[in-house]
Length: 632
Image 1 (tube, rainbow, N blue to C red):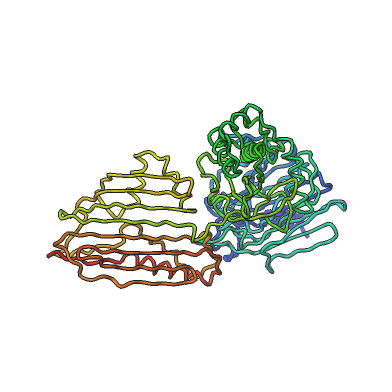
Image 2: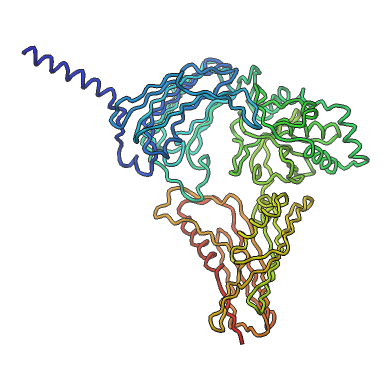
């Protein structure tokens, strides 16, 4: 063989070897993974090593192709650390669509910030990649390693992280020492996830998962997608050893290590509150007085310093400073109640508009919020101590209907918070519409809201006159040229209901066609929502909270008007709820319309979605029914 031929073969060998090293970063994927995807995870490896109950190392390797600007949120290149954790390594490489490296990013190139901002005080810091792409698609290879002495929180594995994100390969590896008591729980698993266990090594993997399109009314991910909870029976939290063998022992550990030494209240404050309480002996009435006292004297500030992420600041410091986070304000209220012989429970909860339970059969550090429960006969009255405006005994949709842990030195256990259903989430209205001879109309209505519907409205009480005008101009959008003569908001915190009284006149509202007037009969509270139609629904759907509307509208018209014909009554019954409307002729010049809607809460399979959509379509159609009047 000639020397020139040998040289060419050598060059081709080197080129092919170099190319094959980058070939894995080519932005080339099957069409099935590109469908509905803004990004594709080519490889996501999370490697968790637990050599002892007080040490954990987490290594990550993530290869992700970003297809468009909407996929940037899936990069996931942030790491957090505090006094108990260290970032050992953090680096990234960026490749173009052809697998060619266009940027190498070292630890020093990442940005770093404190998380403390506004009302949040914390010693946590975040290190993050601030990368602005110049072209799409591009592939990012990201690697990190973190070491921590806190083992109370082991990351939950969500192999499918978000909507519009395809997964080619995702893997979780866990390795732990012989004396480490590790536990795990698999939720919503299916055949796509492969698990292998070998001694003290556990491995999960999933591959070729198509992107999920976000669909209307889809439940939260925790309710239908797979994930793994991981925890230790013996763990370390900011230097304090903990035990999570069962909820009772875990709760007692929390009480002993986080609450017990925080309850002291200054004598001066006790005396001040005693004067307000006077001779009152009823525990619930005393609790109302104390809750009102806390609301008027404190404000919310989030404090996450060291074990303060879970341990509340001292009650006497909250008393002195007048602020605290959810832990501090709840514990302060609990300490005040205890000083006046009113028992209460410090309770851990997952808060948020979407309901989420603590996993009852997986004892571990869970939750993101703290509320207070006061036992009252066979029920618990729940208080949101971070709010300066919520009524006593009303927590709203932030913590309703979910499993929480009450922390006690006597008996800690999982209980359920108050549930609001379609019978307690109600809005009732009574409206009079008077048609005037000059084609104007006068309207007056009274609306009473309770339950979660009250929760959505009670802040109206604090709005300015100008803001209220904007609210009701939009709410009564069926009427043009409105002039309001009365807007009155009454927030009854005892009965926990909101009453709205509104009066207005709409100029030149009646439109005639000759001597005929076609008038929509439901002008005040039309329910027109129709869920989006899908050719192929992919996810289940959920109505998290049911509700009921009941409306009465009375229309009065002048002597020279007559009613041509009343519409027929309507009754629609479904597993999703019901719809009823009734039309009455009260007199020659007065008609009434009575309408009720009940929407049931429920979790439904995707096969029932179209039936629900048609039910809502039926409601919307009936809401636009009109009456025909005639002038003589």
